[in-house]
Amino acid sequence: MASRKEGTGSSATSSSSTTGAAGKGKGKGGSGDSAVKQVQIDGLVVLKIIKHYQEEGQGTEVVQGVLLGLVVEDRLEITNCFPFPQHTEDDADFDEVQYQMEMMRSLRHVNIDHLHVGWYQSTYYGSFVTRALLDSQFSYQHAIEESVVLIYDPIKTAQGSLSLKAYRLTPKLMEVCKEKDFSPEALKKGNITFEHMFEEVPIVIKNSHLINVLMWELEKKSAVADKHELLSLASSNHLGKTLQLLMDRVDEMSQDIVKYNTYMRNTSKQQQQKHQYQQRRQQENMQRQSRGEPPLPEEDLSKLFKPHQPPARMDSLLIAGQINTYCQNIKEFTAQNLGKLFMAQALQEYNS
Image (cartoon, rainbow, N blue to C red; front, side):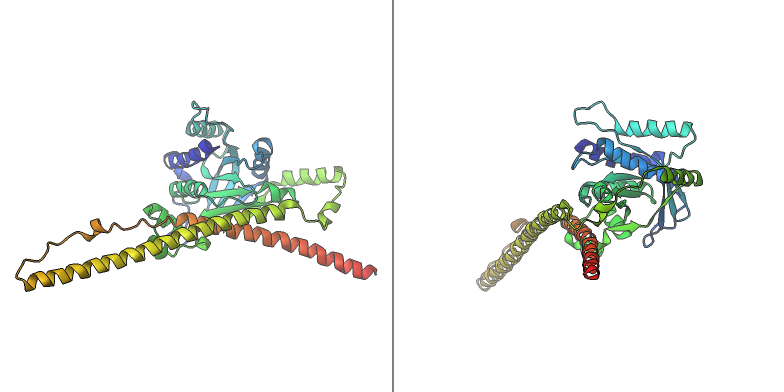
């Protein structure tokens, strides 16, 4: 799986020369405006993503694929997709970029939309805010301005509601990624916080009239599903697992805070030593001047006191963003459970 994630970033870079026409001259986005205001997805694309995970996704295994479509004003229309094939690191002969090129060439031959407009990825309990996703989305969005990443959560979908969200990197984060400077000063100057890293784009799922008629016919013929489990008051292990993942991320955040505090203490201590050294040199030069001796030669203080390397702050921002995602998931889950509990309480009081 590691090789496939690396391949995602390289394939995104190669798309600038082959599929960059998908986004040129059609978006309104600038440095302060998003080029995409809405994402319209065909229902068949959603089914393909779900089927891809059901066939290849297992547990924490992440499945990924390419989104194809076109841009209409400020609306991104996703009309097709195809998955990245499952392969291991032992498949040295497999060329993922070549595979994508052959797939798009085949789609073009049968007159199907073949322009890159982004990519999709499944997630495990909402754990998608990672450096790999950030790098891949930057490569896509840098090559094609309107690119999005679709995040599909199969666990939440299995509970009865489709969980599919579209994200883009904010213009501020794009500028920082272009400069490749993730120092604390650069992030502070760009006003980058975990809330200003990703922006969610509204999604609209659209079906053709024939598909709607077919679904209506299938609904009439199908037996009524037993949905009493949706009213069950017992909480599933979803909440416990999300809380466990949240605790792990909080532990990582606390470790990063300790590293940053250690860096600040060492920097402050070095500044004091540097100041004391300059005072001693000044006093010694004054004594030498009183004796008529020449002053000591100037020394490069940066060589004597090498500055400490500040810890990377981007990882801390990603951890904070992932913590925020977990908190939102817990909020949604507990709100549903509390709603069922209040409803059960009202029914019990009514019956009694």
